[in-house]
Amino acid sequence: EIVKCMIKKNIAVNNSNIGKNIVNLYKNNGQKIILFCHSKACLETLFALSKDSSSFIKIIQKVVLVQPPLKGAPYLGKTFNKVLDKSWPGVSCLAKDHYTKELENILIYNQSLNPFIEKNLLIIKSYKESVKDVSWILRVPYLIIKSVGYNSDGLVRYKDQSMRIERYQHMTLNLDHSDLFCSGKFSNLSTNARSGIINNILN
Image (cartoon, rainbow, N blue to C red; front, side, top):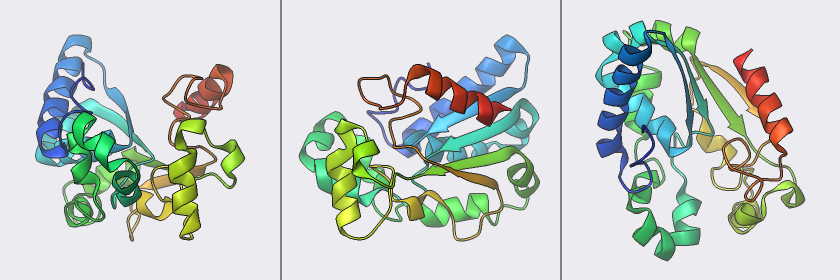
């Protein structure tokens, strides 16, 4: 339910929907939520969190942001621009530094959120050393980004997955952008390997 409109709409629209769904999920289950977010959804979740921080702090136990394009994913648009304009119009919000200032205000300068962020936010960054380990669907953008001297997970540069000041917990894993949340058709990871990584993160 939370991710139904993610692909089609931009961050400004989606963060409101995420917030409502998180609150409803808590009301229905009565348990604190461990929230896993991936890629663009990480940005939408951060905006939702900042809009109603007092409520979310009470109902969220942990937020895990996986491969967040905090400073954008400019090569995504450059590589697939014509295709994405039709199927993913929200991609425009992933332009370089499109939301960097707003995200800095949330992750660095928001005094009311700082204690929660330092204790309960984990950002998982990733990149691949070699193209042979990258899923076939990501090899073209991976090589484009590599050709200009940057490490990436195939879509998001490693350097764009973090803020200049990291007040949150963070770790780096050897993953491409599809590994944790896509099936074997779009990832080189086995289901067992994927499950093992998720369990280690949860633990």
